[in-house]
Length: 476
Image (cartoon, rainbow, N blue to C red; front, side, top):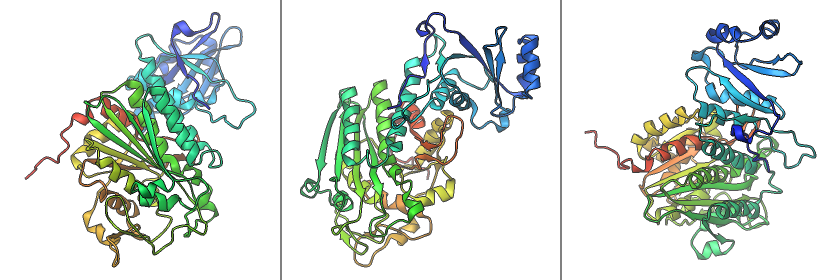
């Protein structure tokens, strides 16, 4: 796969290898940088029109004609939303070599700059005959290289899983990826597969996946000290979504290899937690199925039982992710977690509301909106709080079942979250409706698969987030 180290210590640099300095510059700092350049380099930068505008790159020549330095434009601070992650733009333009961040804007941190660099070095190379060399950023001795690599590699893991086409990332392959992660960190993995889902009371996971040629399954990873606070991380793992009987059109189906992106996010967060050995009892649950069409596919109008005891009328078979998550969330509640977090590529409505870059964040503990959002923003990994607007439960009413699985065309992200809330059993719960995909290239975010909110959530958890009182404060 593509998880090559993108950072190293000075001692790791091969003998004789030149380490090229990088100067990340805002317009107001340009004069100071030019003062430190040779006359030829300053003239070269000016001749190339370098004004420290966002994304500008100039490779400075040395006396021998080789690259002796790099200028990276960052633009003015009030318009630089990418900040340190902008280093990924430079890394994505380079092939091989060793570099170091020699100077940067005062509002940058070296750690996030290194993470931004690593995010930009990502290449999905599984199907390529020739693969480019990855540029390496040499880290200062005071920087925690392992923490940087953990963040970059967890993101690369998730991107790899999403980028892999469904022909090679079906239920069995996604299960195997979870097993590989469990083996790497000494975690235990178990699974309930195929008709055993009915015997063990996961009827909605079974219904969604029963028409596919690979069996649906619930995969569970357990790790950590049982005496530590228990965290359940739940991921939607629909390895391909045809839409079922309510079949998608060609444009809608084209990207549906990414519909297991929730599971990829869950595994990425789990990887960071285990690599850092956070004091957490981790329970990762992946609801895995392919939503296919065959003679035994579930249909609009069917009534499904669920693990939580609620009956669900199927209004639309393309609203399948919430069904598999419902059974997985119900299972997660049974272990009495301090908090449940779910990730899902759940609704197009979330993209209409907030676009591809900003995942909506729902929680039944609204006092958690602020601390989680602050940590995510601090990691340049933003989310946006959205309401669990209770009056919209009326959109999910069914005359013949406890609820429907779709609320219609209005407030689709909200009604999907309200559906999931029913399976959280009033326990502390967060829901992230992620896109898992970049339609265009951005600094640190190549076109294709991507992971959102995970670095920010990890920062909140590492700061002791599970020790936050989980009951809503009385504000009367």
